[in-house]
Length: 552
Image (cartoon, rainbow, N blue to C red; front, side, top):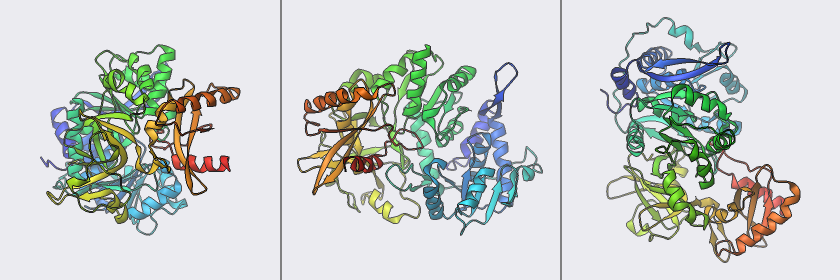
């Protein structure tokens, strides 16, 4: 077996559990209102990806060719992705929700030569001139209209189902894919993934969460869904808009969980919150779940306290900490949060993200906004001090595609072993037990003349108020000084006339804690701007501009 190519795992599963479902997708309802499904077994996924690899190669896609893949999550998305891996081509994965301007910038940087997409993706490609200079090969999944190029379904019709394909012999350090970050702190960057990075992620996830073949997974984030078949799990693709997890219809997720006895689930904090609210109102129980994984931002203890009663006593909610460039980095379970760390979080200690994941070496270094070219142990600071989180390990990516300046700012080379430390761009500290506490993004810290304020510890004080949905610390420049401002998003059922009393209560809360004692300006915002990928990361830069306008 080609042990480094990520697609080799699908081939392995096709041998070990050929007739078990690999991917299952909903397709409307029957006359009785029941959901209709179509599926691929592991053998069928292997065969489909083989056929697609043959066709794509005939259309001109070759090893090393950067290929944009804009396909709705489903069985075809899985088969195409693994087909590209088998060829040795480089899938370029962009989040359609990142915005037209960012999409154009990212695709121009990636310089793709091929584009595979549905009709609407091709219309957008032409309308906004995505990668116009470099694209040579256009492949359509649906009807081929005025955008021309190749038609995938027509070409596949001539390839027998049982045709094999000899995948490329990939090395661990061979480029496998370009995955763009969410862009929550600027223009999204394309993280360069090697086959070794992917394999290390698979190994770490399996060890962290005891994932095994035969598990049934409900992944609500497309890129995470790719891990399910590679780990031997059945991926049940729910009926939802993957770019708007905060607007998911909970009953559709519950229906899928109950239809298949789903044992594992992945969802953003915004999705978990919505599911918890619905479950609490309707008295829903989800006994089949054995694990729930939530990432993208920390899940609050309040949401966990509402969601956990829906699960069986053995099920745990895990919140892995990481980023597109390095995942997983740390992990913590719901019982640890609810029984041990939530109290300290509410006191302003930060959010505990747990112990480092298998294969990860983690350090806390002094905060520095400049480049650090070479690693030195002298960079590290003592436990308990807040600094920047840096990590190294096989699942850590080493560079951004076409962004040498961003790479230099985010990476530190270790002269001892030539390994690369990734600067997470997050600040935090480590306690005496080795647990890591997240205190926010480095760029979001507010530096006043008295002291430096960190977002997560400060916001925790305001989030304790029963009518606060979430808060956000921002800094506004006023007469050469930085003034800390707290933006507040209230729960949806709070009336406007209550704001004055809530403001006074929040000022009193702030005054009672040394971390927030200097904060006196409270602004109420109707709905925070958040990232599209997870609907959970707050765009504090936008809130700062809004706050400046309000105060002006």
